[in-house]
Length: 350
Image (cartoon, rainbow, N blue to C red; front, side, top):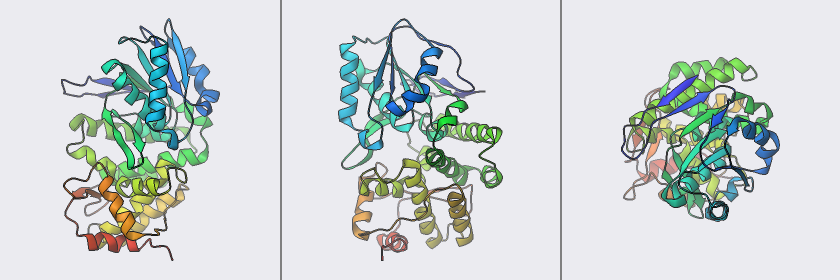
């Protein structure tokens, strides 16, 4: 199955997302596969066998969100310079969202921009992170605050990569799937409630449906000036959760799941979502082994972290919420602080 990303922009090129067992990929020029030891152990051999190139380097970086920073990026760039990569060279991101984000960012920086390919190995990366050209790293102020919109040359999604994925990582990817369904497609949401995620056919349907939804959004709004911001549902709260726990306690999808629950509580207070629907979403997240609670120690500190989010503008926080029912969305920037605090107090530590 091939899903096109058709970007009408002088700065970006269109490309295809391939959802199928990995086939031969011919690449001219030097190639560097960027991965980590965990992914390398399971999938590097398969990636090497699929790539036809005269010169292939393998660059391993440490595994974990805490290494998604400029130090790691600089170490990758240093390896590329030492190997004498040029502007006709290509990077391949073999791994999850962290690897994809960092590799894309390195590609955008090296000699002002070289090609890169996404080869995502986690469900989260396959359904979300690998599609759309968001690249970047974290710093002490927050998540993905240093980065660029930089589209890959192609995305190769092999569902067989998921066979070695730990259950916790798989569940983290399901959070992003639920996010898209709640925001855009009630029928897809209802399918998820009945889907058997131990069944390969259901999983492939979920990947394809999620990628199609994301592709449609990216085609309309490459650089998040409008509808693409809706994909950040759960992230405004979730990024604060990640930052406050130093990116070590929760996987990204787990933090997004918590963020969705928090966003839904705010939506209920604003009469944008019924309590029954908020509870239904929470139950679907819990059914997929995702966390749905976070104890906030300092409400004011949590609130102030919102202003470090990329979506905040002129001291106004953008909250992405369901709008009336599941499958609809709204971006609200005019929510009074006391209303946001009312939602946060529902998660106050005892």
